[in-house]
Amino acid sequence: EADIYQTPRYLVIGTGKKITLECSQTMGHDKMYWYQQDPGMELHLIHYSYGVNSTEKGDLSSESTVSRIRTEHFPLTLESARPSHTSQYLCASSERGNQPQHFGDGTRLSIL
Amino acid sequence: GEDVEQSLFLSVREGDSSVINCTYTDSSSTYLYWYKQEPGAGLQLLTYIFSNMDMKQDQRLTVLLNKKDKHLSLRIADTQTGDSAIYFCAEKGMASGTYKYIFGTGTRLKVLA
Image (cartoon, rainbow over all chains, first blue to last red; front, side, top):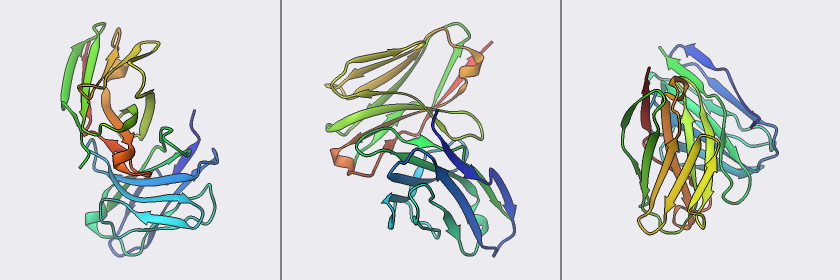
């Protein structure tokens, strides 16, 4: 069983607030990813990281930012939340090479 | 660019077999993956197959790979109501770069009691 954790599971918050979504994994994986997914729809890669101090933007433009100061931790931050940010955010990690990604349970974010 | 396609819906009766199909365009695909997503949850890795294999079986799950036609299928034997979920096919190959996993849009499996 993969050990990747996301908090909070659900967040309802007002427009303009700063939000940080947490993602941690205990598997020592170098690669970590953030996806945005509207319920039941396709996944869109918004950020990824190859390792500590390495972060890149994904395919879908996002106003969020990420950091990777420790191998196990890959938080995502929205400086000023807007209703258009309402979605589910999924964090994943993988070993090197083509090993499969392992996903957290996601954070369902609603901006009022 | 690289693409992975799946049919959107599949409905089967409890106890029957389900077959979920997937096609992909990247001929350099090295690994192909199947994930299951239940409502409100993340993606759960079900199984994956290396591109030099034709078939992989894991309990009720059978994966068939036809590299020539770039076609992947997931067969679920004795389908149960708990199998109702969205199933995502994904691939990773040289064309997609070192970081990118290409996902299909998901097939919604509904199991009728």
